[in-house]
Structures are given as C-alpha cells and as structure tokens.
Image: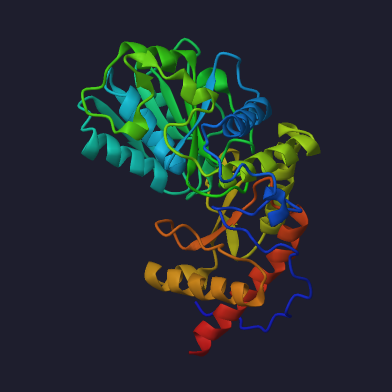
Length: 394
C-alpha cells in the first residue's frame, strides 16, 4: 500500500547528546576524560592502592543496589557474558534446569546448556521477540536461568512472583540491562550478573557477579562434572574463593575501566542513589510512551504493556506499506533511516538488534537525558517519512 507522500520539515533542534546505543551506552551527564584523572595506573591491581580502588568500586555497587549483607559481589572477566557463563559452568549439573528464552541473549544461554554443557535434564520455555514465555511454568525444585530485561527484545520480567522464597533450586538472572535501572528482588535471585557498559555507561570487558548464600553453598558442596577454565573458578581447594569478592580479581582488570565505573557510581550517589536512577529511567520511558501513543507508524515491540523495558526501548514499525515488504527489505529500509539520523547527528546506533525484527532500539537508561530523547523523536518521524518518499519514488 503506497502511503501519502509528504515532505516533512527538518526538525530545528538536535539532541545535546545523540548517544542512544544499547551498549556501550552513553556516559553519565557531564563526563569527560578528566573524570579518570585519579585512576590507579602503572601499579599492580594487587598493590594496596589497586586493591583499595577495587574494594571501593565493590562497596559503591553494593550500597547503590541495596544488596543483602550476606550476598557477595565480585568483578569478573569477559563482561556480562563471562559472568553468566561462570555461573552456569560453576553451579549447574546438580539438578534439573529450566531455561526461559525470548531473545538473543537468553537463547545464547540455551545454546550453552544444550551444546556445551549438554545438560541431560533440561526444560526449555521459549517465546518470540516481543513476548514472554509463561514464567509460572518454573518448577522451584529445579535450577532456573532467564534474562531479567531483554536488551535485544525490549521485554522485561515484570516481577518475581513466580519464584518461591522457599525454592530448592538456584535462580540465575542475567540482569545486565536491569541493574541500576529498576528494582531487583534479590531475595528471589541467587545469581545476578551484569556489566558496567549498560546502566552505568561504563567501558566493556568487565563483568559483575552477585551470589546469594545458597549459591555459595552450592559452590562448596557440588563439583561440576566438566572441567572449569581458570577464569570461571569460584572455589579454591573446595572452599569458596571469597577473596574474589573483596577485590582480589581472578585476572587483571583494567584500572582505567574501574576508575570509570567508580566515577559513574559516585555520580549516581551524588544525584540521590538508586531511586534517582530509577526516576531518570521512568522519565525516559514516559517520553517515548507519550510519542508512541496513537502514533500511526510505530509501537512498542513488547505485546504486554507490563513487560515493556524502560532501558532497551524497542520499537516496531506498524505502517501498512512497511509491513507489506519482506523482512530483508524492511531491515534495509531501517538501515537507511538510521544512517540518515547518524549523518544529521540526531541519534547514533539506534537500529534494532541484528536478530530482532526490523525496527528501532533506543537506550533509555539512567545516563540518558529525557530532553535528548524528546529532541530525537521528531527526527525519527522525519527520517521515516524520508525513506518512505525515497522508496516509492524509486
């Protein structure tokens, strides 16, 4: 169906900060390289100043997240991916596992469970992009793996009511697009993983893992049937490697990245802590929600309003002419549209995840200013009208 061709006006205002990538995400407001001036460089991370920096970073994260006193938090290699795989390789195998997957990253953990760990007792619950599987199918006597907030699908778990406080199994939650952006029910979670490159706007390569006392008990009383690489080992001679959770990292961290994380965490404390971070995220989602309300061409990818992610805000195109094209053409059109926005300096890296349906993905985490999102949205309308005109002129 050919749309009515029009020549929309070029918006007059650009975002002050056009960085809307979903990872690495925008730096915190006011950041510049001088923020890293106190980095512990040229010294061993095991030196007294190095350990002090690492411990300070861990203490800031613990305080901002409101972790229970008996939970452990540590810095580990290889970003969120490394943290999730460390948990899977170190903890799974004692009992059956339920995996819930509805987007690219959850399906990666499913691939690990099936093809790498070759778990014999595995139940899989899947859904398409934009939807959640029925989480109440979880059997609390089994271990569980899921993604709290789907970075690639814009769908989050709305609550943890389906996880029993008296569960027998361990619950592993990939939460990299959730922590510091929404409340996390730690009493229902045994392993929580994330990286600094999401809500904190940090640099890549470092992961963080949080363990409940029940997870520590599993580590000390169960030996997995497969070999563990050194960077996955959370025990030493059968005992919990507690030093890792006091800043004695398994491998060498970048102290420049640690300093960058400290800077973001101290900014978060300064503006009011995690509640202030949550408020910033909620305001960002409200800006996009208001724009989409009754919009003729766009809508949230998430089917259920209760599951809309406020950080990885994922948008599908609803225009009839666009949906009449095949998926390859749709993705090509969106790629052209995104390039127009980048060329104008209006918004960078807002294409949907490569495996997701053709559409847009706007990071709305706490380091993004709501006013910048307000400035971006008219540019999206302008660019979409432009690709429609170009498509039908040819």
